[in-house]
Image (cartoon, rainbow, N blue to C red; front, side, top):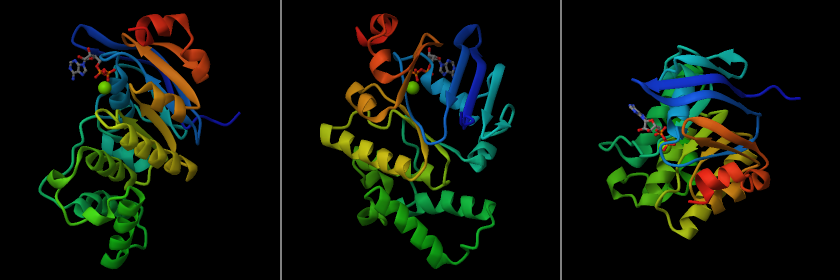
Length: 245
Ligand code: ADP
Ligand code: MG
């Protein structure tokens, strides 16, 4: 068996007296495409926040690439190869689309002491990322000029700039049209084919089923199912708590 890239054990998170997550165990294998589903408020984003260090879990352990992450700040986790896109895109509104990628690129490059120090090489990396997400024509625009799907692509490209091993896409398709959803699936599939492990959090079941090799389901802060997508969507608990709504 391959060692998991991400290993969550017994994770719990409370907000005051409210238990948002309890007893969460989750493994993600290198190269895997995992779908994470569940009703609104079931704790999906909170789990991502605990894994990525935006929030700190009181109980349990998160390991990434064999290292214990507990207590590490978010930027250290990004350094280690963990990246996420936010459910609500958070671009730097005063910067151009290209500069929104240059900032995380410079950060990544500097950290790894890579030899890409010339502005020309940075531009090339930036253009390459823009091309990957189909935003090369919008490099000089501001995020406010982008359509909703372009904004989502920029959000994913910003996460990609950190050259992650694991990318967590938190509802990257909400509000998009059928063809725009296909676009994002194709983009995530390409990234996965390049070796990036991906967790997709999504309500659009057609997209989740197309994308996922495995599905995990959260309901009220607990994991109620984890397995082959076709088994999970036929699991009576999952149907009752989520799909049957
Ligand atoms: P999901 O992403 O599955 O829709 P969330 O993880 O965003 O769910 O939220 C899970 C629960 O935790 C919800 O009841 C939400 O209101 C609560 N919650 C999330 N973040 C906070 C916070 N920072 N403070 C207090 N409660 C929160
Ligand atoms: Mg959420």
